[in-house]
Structure formats: C-alpha cells, structure tokens
Length: 280
Image 1 (cartoon, rainbow, N blue to C red):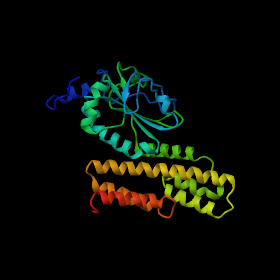
Image 2 (cartoon, rainbow, N blue to C red):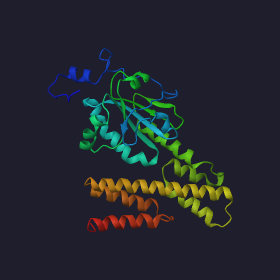
Image 3 (tube, rainbow, N blue to C red):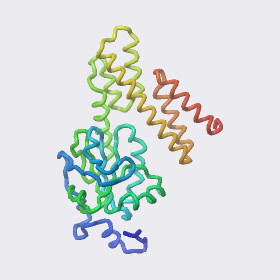
Image 4 (tube, rainbow, N blue to C red):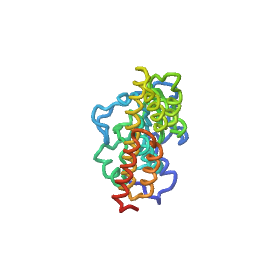
C-alpha cells in the first residue's frame, strides 16, 4: 500500500486504515479483557522478533500489542507514544509489540529508521493474527499482563500500564517480611532508591536472617537494572540532541540513589556525561 496523500478525501483515509472496510470505524476489535490473550507466532519481524517468536514467549512481562497498518495516518500518529513508552519502560518490564499488516522487515526497515523507532515489530502477512483479536480497524491496542491475560482492550491507558508494571515489579521482588513492608511499597511505586536504602539499612544491623538477606540481594540486583535502564535512556536522549533532558535524567538518578551502594555509580555516570558535553 503506497503512502496516502493528504489531498485524499477523509473517507478514503479512514477506509485505508481498515482492512474490513464494511465495518464501522468505531468497532476496533473484540473486547477480550480478562481472557487469556490469543497467541501469535511470527514468521519474521524486527528488533527482537524473529522467525518463531511468539506472543507467549513474552509471558511474565507486560505486553502492549498494537495492531497497525504501515501507511495508515491514524496508526502513524500513535507511534511516537509507543516509542516514548518503549524508551521509558522497556528496561522495566514493558514489551511494545507492533503487529503490522502485510509488511515484513524489508518493507518496514526504512520507515523505522527514518522515524528512529526501535520497538518490536511482528509481521501479520495475511491478517490472520488481527482476526484472532477481532480487529476491524487500526490502530487497535491490547494490554496483556504478566499472567498472559488481557487487561485492556481497544486501548492502552497509562493507568493500566502502570498498574501492570507494578505487578511485574512485585512478582520479581518476591516474598517480603512484614517488617519491611516499606520495601514492597517502594518497589510498587517504582522507587528502587528507597527500597535499596531500606534493605541495606536492615542488613547493616548485623542480625538480618536469611530471608532478609535474600530480599536485599534481589533488591540490589533489580535496583542496578533500573539504574542502568535509566542511564541507557539518558544516553539515547543525548544522542537525539536532547542534552537538557539527558541531564535531567541523570539528576533524578543521582537523587533517587543517594545514600545507597549505587550512589557512586549514579554520580560517576553524571560526571562522565557532563565531561562529554564540556561541563555544561
């Protein structure tokens, strides 16, 4: 499908965003909320989707499935948000998975590069995958939780994504003693700095049992992953010419991890960044 000219009538543009043109535009896809998400296995794709990759292979993470047509203006208008959330949360449990009708990697590579998109892409060559979700018009979105069940249909509200990512973090955290409930609350709130300060304080008392030590080890590992993910985002923003945004991320990381064993890592990363841009 060739790119749609802005000069075309609105009705033609709408039809181009639907591969079942007789269906009203308001009817996006089936409401599958609460049900196990229909599985999909891709013959090819990009950015972490290869031949044989399936939706179920991402079980345990939060998946935002976005059905799109490459040349649909309405679909294209939603992709900056997809990239933004991929940048922000892909290192924290979110999989942004676009399912593209018809086009494989050769037909998507230039489009992705021109727009600096690097979220996952899977090819729905004949529309059969979209059919499993009852998709009639695109873009159509589904949020799938860590249990493989659909948490939102025909949309991907930030509130749902945040809740499901909180569930992802708690699942990774595991059991928490009642005396360290604050750690659970901090991880739910995506505040690994506070969680790390609490567990390190508990261990420093010298009488921590095996359960507390194991929790402290998990928090330390996950906090480092979170710190690294934020530094990756800062580096990407710097490459995109958003120097002030990158510095703001570094500043927040330093603040978040102050008073923890990762404080020096955060400070050193910020110092290197400032040195690289001439100390500005």
